[in-house]
Length: 362
Image (cartoon, rainbow, N blue to C red):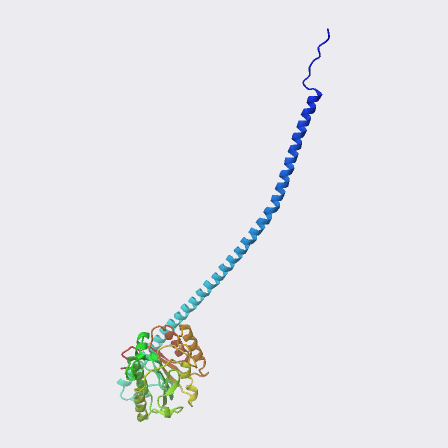
């Protein structure tokens, strides 16, 4: 009987099929792996480009923000510096005012003591004999020096050998506030002349003329957009303090003048050089900072800063040797810098500054 052949599952054909299948799987894996690598490489190339553009945009925005921040910081620093300068200027002005008050109070006490000693003495000659010669000489020199001496009650510097009185005759002298200035500006001339503020200005001029020594010379000038002598026929000449007739003419002429126009401090100061000799004492009666410089502006809308600039230009036009300028200020609303600027002008020139009450000198 023939021997039965033993069957084998792992024949050569089976192994070939398995190898081919395994090879196909490996081939498929290799293809997929290669595809993924190509895809990732192309995606990696595109992403850096997009990221680079975004970074560039963000950098530009950051630069603009930094520039804005720096500009804003500089602006705030400038504002802070300006505010600090203003505060410092006001503080210095307050200190100077306090010192001036203390100085005037001390001089007042000394003068009262001198007056008391004179009144209790047997005679003026007896008083002078009690004083040392040097003290008497110093006292006379103080009273006769250029610019005179300060009156005890007002603090005004009186005296001088050639005295110039400058009175502001612009429209602002019609009233103390803008509404009433505009209202009075449209009135008839006689109503303008009777304006209380203008009458106070005239009263001060009369009060100063009464204080002028008989041996002294003086002149009275009105100024608005131009400077004009109260008595035109006496222009560029000095008047005698002892001439009562001239004084009466000035008073009469002032009572017929009505305030009008803008304020040019430059024109007022130009009078100094037209007089010979130069004045050694000046009274400036004014209510505000100037609204113009040398020429009449086309637009009368003037800001507070413009007025301060006009003031500085006017002061710069003064001669090198400036006599004492005594300021009598009738303050007007909407002009807060006027008291500070005029006080500094009086202080620098060795003059006096007063802001009188409404019921004075009448």
